[in-house]
Each structure stands twice: as C-alpha cells, then as structure tokens.
Length: 137
Image (tube, rainbow, N blue to C red):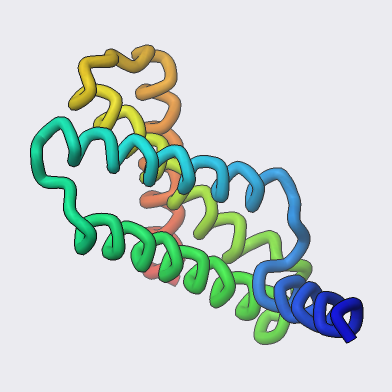
C-alpha cells in the first residue's frame, strides 16, 4: 500500500512541478537557505516569533504552487515541455530568494560578494524584462 501511495504522490508531483531538474533543486535549496537566514535575521532584529516563521513557510508554499501553475500552463495549455513559463517563474524566484539571502546575511553582519549580488540582480532584471515582453504580446 505504501509503495502505491508513494508512486501516486510522485506522479502528482511530476505532473504539478515537472522534472526534479537543476532549476527546481536550486529553487528548493535557495528557499531553505532564505528561510534559515531569515530566521537568523529576525532573531537578530528581535522580531522572531511563530507568526513570522509561519508566514515564511506559507510564502514558500505559495511560490511552489505558482511554479506548478507555470508548469501546468506549459505542459497542459501550451502543449510544451514545461520549459517556458516554469523556467521563467523559477528564474524569477531564484533571483528573489538569492537577493533575500544576501539581505539576510547583511543583517547578520556578513557582506555578500558583489559579483553574486550583481548576477542575481541581472537575473531578476532579465526575468522582469521577459515578463514585460510577455505582457506586450
């Protein structure tokens, strides 16, 4: 029974989020790091409480649901392979999470490398520009 349940859950996850590729793995890693550094920053600023932590988890869950929407639009509506909308959504969230990690690190007194911040800002700008191009068409 458990094997069947696990297989069904994995099939649903595959339908919703597509393959567990490098983009999705990177997003999950960034989300975990952002959550942990966010807890550290909130603790340092003396604003850590259970509602801050809960909102952070809900926010990450909603981000994953939006990735699922992008994947379903790609595969079920547009008939593609999940690389257009899904990749754009993940790219935007990777940039946002990465910048948030650097902000949290700054609050904790750790200066992030400028090259990393520049790369994340460039990725965010590219995703925002791609978003603007999509809206015009």
